[in-house]
Image 1: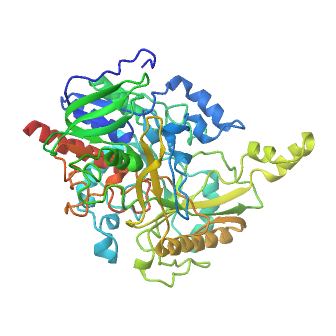
Image 2 (image 1 turned 120 degrees about the vertical axis):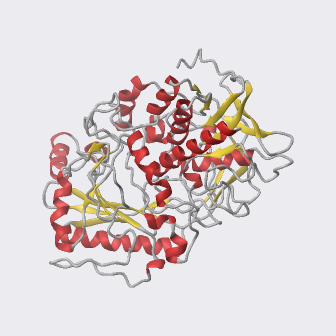
Length: 554
């Protein structure tokens, strides 16, 4: 697509207008187009030239180029605010462009556990989803196929499945083998990580060739990103417009249906795209922002917001980590993604182990006092040689000798901890700051509760025990006081059966507006501690089936 000559005028009234071209929007658009529907996709960011990805990778590892500049983020377009005692660094890990966040994600794709859908029933806290694991089970399999997932069925704690993964899993790394002996002595189970990257050539893309720069750039195309389905959607007849941020959704006189998406173009024009149905797939921050920007006399608090839940119950996963050094080489930074994890403490984080040479002690807590924990064995621990050299005051042979001595023996564990949805964590509009089109920017209110802090401490305890058994000299730790987000934006247009407490139905259609649907992690009721993209994909494929059914009936 040539940005200088692209036609950004609206189509005649189409069947479906999708706002956003990340994994949710692209999968919905492709599936509906294959069913014969006319679809237009509106994307706020640009269509990056794939031929530039090698240069972007090189830019990402040069001094003076942060992760934001790699994908041209920043400025008034991407402004936000985050008041309160804990700042949320939104722009640290988001991309606006065709393909969305999958342009720079790590690519780990796990199914939520059965327990994640039933937190209220099992633990007496939060809310249950209005759907369960069995409802998503066939869509999880379809999502794994769509994302070309490489994996092995060796995780004894994973939810049930029948199908093999589309591609074989990646073998354990060298650093995984260092962890393995210590974990076996402690009774800690290690297993492989499903990855949305090709272990073998598939779907016109090569196998992973090991650039190791997966986040922020995979230049080879082996790692899945949503541009694959954007291309498939376009081949099926979908029209994709880039650099057309949607300013608001306008409803008809009755207030029962969205009539048009109003979008701006780079030349300053404003257009209205009309459609029979609208799918909002802008992510957990921009989706509620768009609905709030679409307020009217009928909906003074924002479109589809009669419940007051739009923007509320914002959740993320929290990073937890422990690391240091070993007295032997670990081959750090040779693999840019995870190959081994541990879900042993996910459904019951209080459990201990029964190792033959020591163990992880059980936590002195009730299971409902702690959230799920996903542990990760890092392949990329420690600073890079470039980072070390830039921070050194040495030069020449002295610097080279120091690098040879200090680099290559880093070892670390990471992990994710889930937090429960709370009304006081929310996305609102900040009228004191506006974007490049004069709209209020997103205002993010985010904090941690005691349950999350306790879970972070528990994860640190387990990590310390494993690294101590390994013989590591522990040098750093990320826990309750210095944790940060995983940038998995969830919960801000939650799913439910009660229109007074939720934004979308179990079929992902808004309660208030009969032709407005929402795709993505903003519909999550709880977030577990698993990376959300596979669940986003599964829910999006399910949404497309329900929307196709309604379009055929009306």
